[in-house]
Length: 196
Length: 251
Image (cartoon, rainbow over all chains, first blue to last red; front, side, top):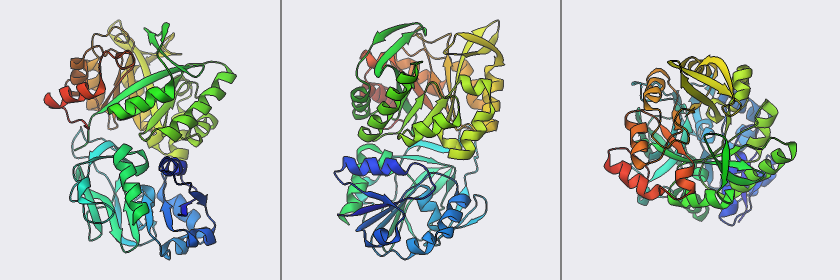
């Protein structure tokens, strides 16, 4: 199986590469449109800031490329946020695959720190990639912006308020958490994605 | 619900794990990658690898170690020690570290925090503070606790947050190595005044000390080294205990 990881100006791309290698898959990390279109699976990872990464993708016409992918695509963290319509982070128009907004966490109590950092549980997990067996399992999050619960929400997590831990629409899947850093549960989710 | 984190810390010298007793003497405690993998299997939530080597050769060895850790371990890890400029941060993040911990370099040149936050995001920037309680004041120290500064713990932590730190790792030199509990009064003051997560460090000897760091000290995470390395406290039994005490942990 050919798995391609989209290479762009975001951080943490190689941790997904390492995670797949632990599962016995050697992915290709690339920005080459042809390789990305032909791959069996595409992963869109990333840690970083919305406006500079969107600008980078647009300048290289990678935005259209990503929106038109037909195979299963998995966005992770910033990848998921960029797949939404708009982000409050520097008022950025994003890819619009999911008709959803990305908002900044606003702490309501002193103990609610931002970023939301650490292990939190999955709830209301839907069928498919994010199977109900994952209900109440812990996964690792690091983020200051979130996607509210919407029509595409495939799992929720509660921090300050319930938000989208995962999204799904057609061949597009996305997680706000980092499956590549979520131990055995994360590996299970990546395996599920490879088996789709 | 967001879980409180348990973080074993591995001090690395020339590619091997050591642990300081009051920052001075060292005892050997094993292979860093294997030890990290064991902690991950036991339920550690994150790992910290601290490079205490001073030489240039040692730095290269450490970067190679970071690559091995990233390849083998599926939980987040922070690296620290000897980070002086953006170039060091880039090298360690490129090797696969999730976060970097900066200490003396930030005290000497606080702008480094802003530079890291701007280039890599606040979430990768852990500001580590070594402070000692003396003359009714928490005083920050440089160089692993060897050189005192003029700065007060709470002022410096607030400044670090303002400049873009993602977390504060507070080590109480007064409590470190003594195994008589964390500095929970100072921890609670930090937790009540800052808006970023606080990692407690220095003083763990018993399971109850972790409970106190979370419930009295309001810390978001607790770091320890020797109690884990020498098998004095197992992470699974620690987490069972914490859950019974009403602390939300990942089991």
